[in-house]
Image 1 (spheres, helix red, strand yellow):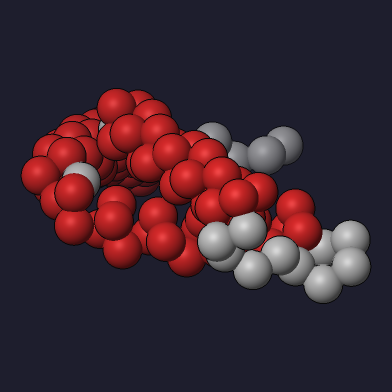
Image 2 (spheres, rainbow, N blue to C red):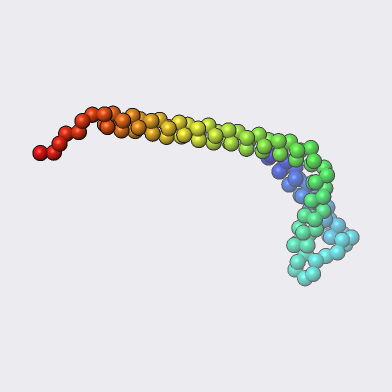
Length: 112
């Protein structure tokens, strides 16, 4: 997952440098007034998104497999913990039922 993120960030930085160079050279239009920096960032984001989508397809698939495996492990741990809690509750109910049965079988003393 970290590898995919770093690769995506690298593509964004590369696009940022290319767009900045194009704007600086006058090939790409400058932003209005003081918005030149924002224009360069937004244009870089728009250009890097489809490039990342195509170029990083395999890496994205690997990252999604890692995420699915991690989620499956967490679900398995939660199910194991839940079953342990259920067993503890069932055991407590059984002990309580046995204690109640034993107390009903003994004669109760009369208050004086």
